[in-house]
Image (cartoon, rainbow, N blue to C red):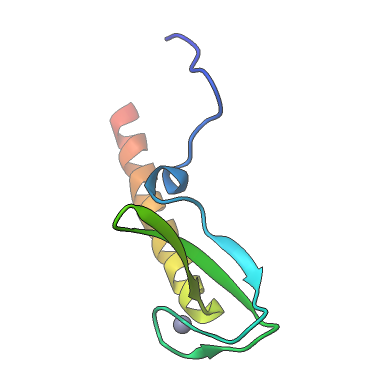
Length: 87
Ligand SMILES: [Zn+2]
């Protein structure tokens, strides 16, 4: 195996980009549950590509927690699949 060039890509980056944490400077509605996230509160923005350009949608901490858990579950599944193939 030849050494791969460049930085190791992450699955998240290969989709639409990595989510970012942000302190809101004005009130926004959570993309998923539609609850208001107040100004000064932390939210996470998940990039989403719509007709060729990327917007970063805000998610409240509760929703992002669930999304994070789902992502971890998906990764855990890939992890066990990967380990199975190794044998
Ligand atoms: Zn929410």
